[in-house]
Image (cartoon, rainbow over all chains, first blue to last red; front, side, top):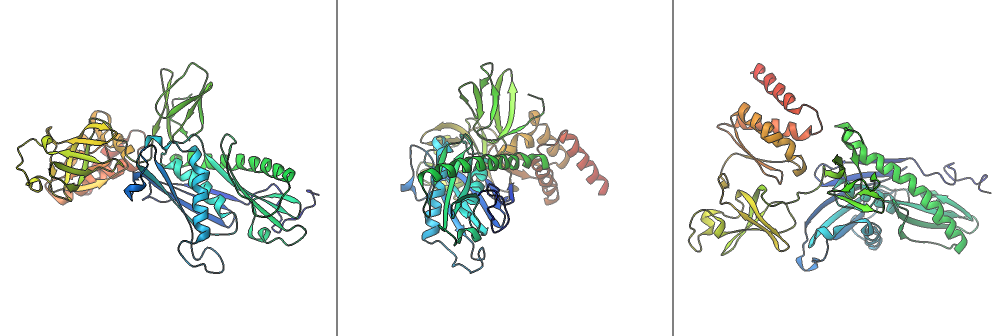
Length: 234
Length: 224
């Protein structure tokens, strides 16, 4: 079945869209990165560790990670109202949880690391692009980390597991319909984040996780190369 | 392991085996030594470490820094030197007697000051202006570079900054936090010095940078 399966954009089932990754795109930030899955483009800027205001939220035990995910109003074909909403608040929190396990913020008590993620163009999998960009930007900002984080969305279209869901696939209508599973892994293959929107059996979920791990290993290589490229230009 | 400095990313294995010692910004995991920060890899006598090339300023004791007065209290000043910790300059660390309630006459909010880090603790940073050359800045030019580029701007034993000083006739103080003060007899000299400093900061990876800067000055002289 997997050989014959036709995806709307003609990709193979385990093929991601064209990935572009760049580091150091925002000169004013302490660290910045861009990450794109085809038409989905995320840019991330990192500021800090810096003073944490309001002061009462400071944590004297370790530094705090604060993420802000934002979709720009022109990122989708139907203009979205600018500013935060329920969805962006959820994704901001999810991004924090996905990245926090690799960060070593115990060296910066009472401080905050701010991560601003902006989606400048969206075609599904925006949170995954955001997490990938944020991980690169955090490394670029010189934040001590145990490793990198790579993220990918796995889809189940009818009964077929596919890698990197696009908008057309998110709206799949045949058979069992679409299931979207965004996942994040550290560079040593530990999961830091998983979400599931739809229905899936336990067996297929296991298959989805293995597929995601494979895809994330490839994404990690791209992130690594992007981080190492910066200096060669100079 | 080659002489060429290579870039490493967090989580990357930079050395294997028990012969190596983990240095700054590295961690030992089993038999492997792993980088925990983005930067340049360096190995000296089996000691491996990572030299950061980006990120915010890491304060160290004895650093000369340039900061801005944030607040004036009864017993001292809070100075912003670009760290998440508060840095405090007590009145007792001012080289002359200051009358009570007249702290503003020494340093007021918004003033820039050259200071030295006296002490680092969990509570914050203590500063002093009791040494020579540490004082309030009244004129000249302030510019900012990434604090990780400061070593290149200063050069080996101050070679780079001394060259710029000699060529432009400006007085230059490079704060370890990346803030640089330039003071010359006229604006043109200051701008010349600023251009040279920014040139160095933009080309930290170039080889023979001092010669490059010398060439730049020679070219400018010809144009004049």
